[in-house]
Every structure is written in C-alpha cells, then in structure tokens.
Amino acid sequence: MKVNKKEQILEAALKLFNTYGFDKTPTSQIAKEAGVATGTLFHYFSTKEELINHLYLRCKDSMLKRVLDGVENEKAYRGKIRRAYGNLLKWGLECAQEFLFFQQFSNSASILESTRQEGRERFQVIYDLIEMGVRDEILKDIDPELLLNCIIGLVISNILFLMGSDQQDNAPELTETTFTLLWDAIKR
Image (cartoon, rainbow, N blue to C red; front, top):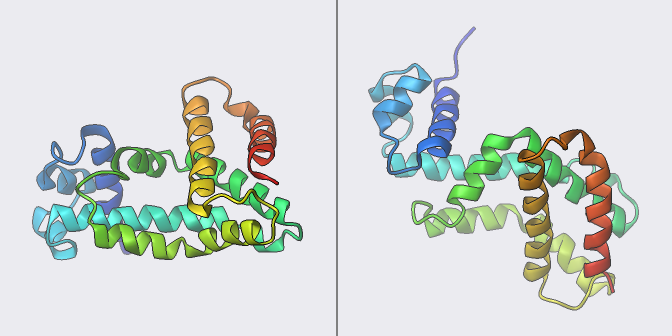
C-alpha cells in the first residue's frame, strides 16, 4: 500500500501548528512527525509558508464539503440553513484539529491575502445562499457577510462550549436549541 507522504506532512503540520504555533514549529519537526525526510517535505512544499497556506485551503475545502452535505436536498430555505448550520457544528466537533487550526490561523499574517481570496471564492456558494435569503426577504435586510459571520460566530461558540464540557452527547439537542435562537435572530 502506497503511503501518501504529502498527506502525512499535512496531518503532521496540522497537529504541530495547533500545538506549538507556526513560528515555533520547525520544518524538521514536521518532517519527523510525518515520518519523512526534511527534503521530502520541501519536495511538496518549497517553504513553510507555502505549507500553511496549502493547509488553510485544504481545511477550508474539508469544511465546505461537510457544510454543503445534504443542503441541496432540503426543500425549504430554513431547512437549507438548518442543515448547513448543523453540518458546520458537526464538522467542528468531528474535525477538531481542522477547526482549531482555523481558530488559531484564520487571522494570521502567515496566511496570504491571495490564499484568503481563494478561500472566499471557494465559499461563494455559501455567500450565495445567504444572499438569496436576503433577496427573497426570508432573512433580515442586513449585509449577507454580516449574517454569515453571525451564524459562524454562534457555531464557533457552540463548538468551543462542547469541546470544553462533558456535554458532547447533547450536541443534537444543543444544535436544535441554538439554531432556533439563530433563526429567530436572522429571519424577517
């Protein structure tokens, strides 16, 4: 069975960046954790900056794939938002390392503006969903980006709450309760 060295490097970098931060994680440590030679790391990523930017987009793609799962099957707009909300919460809990990476690095100077722009472009479908709700007068007439940030903020709060508590078994109930709070806040 062929080992995917690039994937090993990305997983090691994710773990180490979350634990030690970007500046305190040398490439030699990433290579060692990945079980590859440092030269192999540089074969895939010419710099540590390129590695973290690649990791940022990889995590963003993982998030987007999970968020959109089943959304198109929902008939009602509220159902689409509810599904995306629940999916995002579930992603954060099930992909905790990726979630923690975003918490730590989403505003980091290590992430290039071009990488951020590419990430925003990949998430256009989510922006479009929120804009549709505003346009169709389902959601409040507020900047769609602000509405999306409100939704994400509540999800982040819930994920952090659940990670720090013994209530992860109550995640489905918490999701329903907090979605109702959110929906009441953003609907017209």
